[in-house]
Length: 572
Image (cartoon, rainbow, N blue to C red):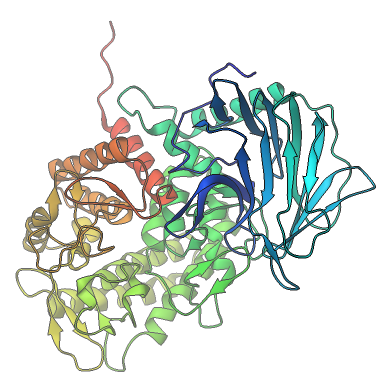
């Protein structure tokens, strides 16, 4: 059995075992906030679907690493690894394994059917939920099956024996494929995956050291959450998670692109483009894109101008003129959506129609009115307009430089003249014009403007941010607020994207020490609690989806930047 270091180890309860490009993973997480007692093969095609339940014949201890998943018992062990993105290899000695349909009930429109294929002697599960087949080919041992060709409610399973060594391949595919080759050596597959992942880490985080102990695991979260083109995702995509947050939301993707920029320019550029592939006729980006759905009921904030500027500073290759021209066109359409579709007549500032549009779904900024002109939206759009003006100049479009620059000046003047009350920013109802303040961190987000802020405004924002600072980072609602909730989503917990945006803005505004402190606290939080969707601001505990890629990416972004800022070691 395999006895080599196969990448960072992790809890399978928190991070699924998967492979770069694969649409399925092995995990006990079978639905939102739901864990089964057994590990399942979970497919992310057409949604999140537990397809096969994996049950050892005895109670085991499970360990996971980048290239190898192991069930252990004193009588023996079971090991699993990937053979490419569509195939899982499993082998066992001294422990049996039952590979069963996750659901017992088969109807004309749901469930999983099992048959014994007379062509290649394999057992095939077909899943209505994923629209895919799962072929189990025996490479060693004598499996038996139950529920073959059964209809209605019945147990359907392939059982591997405990009293003899066994090995199988489990493949996810569509209608048919060639017989699985039986000559692929399991240990060689483990070594190959180990080397592949190690190469990715070396490119992604060559700066890692004992001072960045979470870097390899952050890399694994990104690497394993990447899927090959499929369905509506026509490019390789880093999903937010291979748990239930298995989509690409139209601002989350920017942080993954930034983390990947130096390691894999092509993959990073694909991440930027993914939502733009689905712009609607008005230029709006979708709320999210997944394998089998594109949602347009909300949008997400225009963080893309900020992200593009950051990306170009990090990419391992320059963008071609064609790439810049195409991105300029797409970014311009996205910006004019806000200017044409989300501004009330006579208003310079655009508005959100719901908290979901901001990405801060239930922030207290939206407790009064939902349809509001907010300071974060104005600030992000201002950065995007400045980026468009710079791109237009680079592309030789002087008239458009002037148009974007004039609009930017109007929005800046309105942001500072109307939404700044002398102490902090407020929001304005798009319908009534009524101004309203809140205690949400969202109202302090104009710090992203950095040096473009007047000195008194910059100082006021920095002072306001300190009220949100806990031992672990920036709470989205101050812990002494009556609206604070430890697991309140955007009403208390610490989030990665807000941290990265604010840290960058503070740094560009000259608040270097404060920015360093925020970076340090967030990196320490990830090293303690992993890469959860968000974190309890007081305890630092991970909350919600526990394998979230934008959190891993944010750790890598901040760790890499911290490394670059460190003075070089003097020669010995």
